[in-house]
Structure formats: structure tokens, C-alpha cells
Length: 129
Image (cartoon, rainbow, N blue to C red; front, top):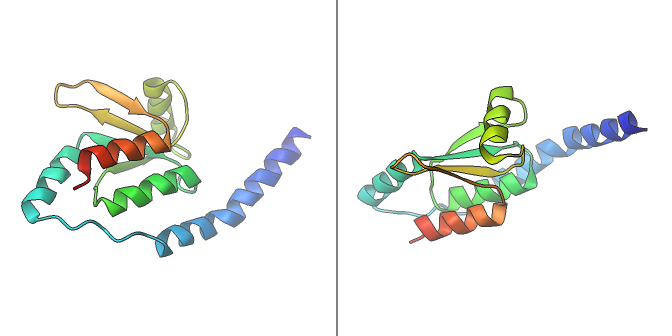
């Protein structure tokens, strides 16, 4: 029974994945406009941020939409198909749960945010104008 359930959900992801990605592309919010100096500062602050994600995860899509709205060039790592990224996520955050934002501060300390709402709140608090 378990293989049948896995097959069902895998097939469902294969069929719905492209639809979800198309919806993400078509419903993308307008990007925030900043001056060149402000955007350069935001870009440098984003160097310490990494988003671990699954491409078709609805919660990851929600976070990516907010990243686009805030014009944030945050690195994105695939934790679904890349074993090294998945291992790093598991070791750092303690779970292979996405979306997960790795925040590396200037002093080298690392913080992991694992809930889409918490990630969005953090990004809005730090980068919203």
C-alpha cells in the first residue's frame, strides 16, 4: 500500500509542478524600486542569506514571491534533488524542512529560519522600505 501512495503523490507532483511554476511566473508581484545606492546596499546584505528550497513547494513559492517583490537577490539552493544541499540543511537546521533561510551575520554566526511566515516577516522587517 505504501508504494502505491508514494506513486500517487509523485505522479501528482509531476502533473501539478509545471502548473504551479507557471502560476508563480504569471502572478509575480511588481518589484520594489530603490535607488542604485540603496539596491547595492541591499545586494551586499543579501550575500549572507541562502534559501534552501524545493522548486514546486507552495511555501517556497510564497517566499520566492516576496523575495521578488522586495527585489532581493538571495541565493537559492535545491534541497530536493541535490544531496549535498539537503545534507547541509539537515545538519544546520536539524530537519530537511523547506523553505529554510540560512542567515550568516557579519561576525560569522548562523541562524536558520524554517517557517515561510517567519522568513517573510524577517525579510520584510529587514528590507522593506
